[in-house]
Length: 289
Image (cartoon, rainbow, N blue to C red; front, top):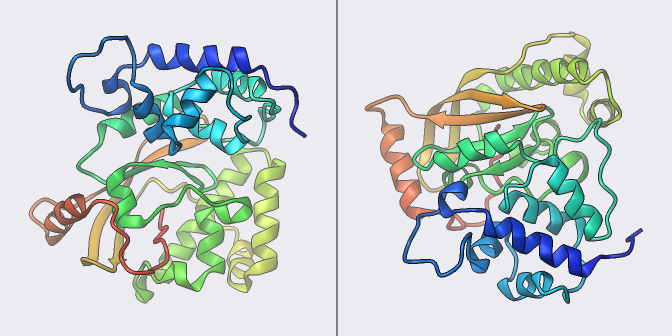
């Protein structure tokens, strides 16, 4: 239930956080002179995926209460830490999430690293394989991965329940991918102390996928740190990349996809960088983190 919204404090807090950010802090070029310190309002709105007019109303203390999902998007756009994110939630009338079992707020250090990566597909994912943020090249390569809800937020859940999802990898790679997904999930469940979020995901997977039940019973465990990934893209075809976890923090990991020097994948990534986030037909997102 939505609690009382402190519109005045909410607006002041949003303005103050915007004022302390510089374009370089969020991976934007510094273009032209700025009459006031901080990011421009339209830049924050763009980063959060919202209307600049609505952000203006919020900052003026007169907008309708933002949803919890929109507050989370604003927290990412403004590079808030966990305490600041929780404060923003409360000002907007939402309860702050419990500390245990929640990893949906992107670690600030990982987000800063993600901002610095422009020529390689990169993303930040939780230990349960939920993609929390990704750069433009990852969008172009893998499809949008951050708008799902429930167990479907986990790429591991998708891998075992959605045949269209598996179409993003060659059939001959499916067995190795399944083994890697299960081993990594078991390691995460143990590291979390079998909390409700992790055990709920396992329970849902066991109910939905005979393959997952079989592989889970094998009790393989292996934290995923690197791999060779072959991704089938509808515009550029097969793209072979190294998959590496380059940094970790608070149950999250920064994942970077990189091509071998001189390989065909170098040119294909350059082409995707030009194409940007065009929608390639109606193909399903290729979530393969």
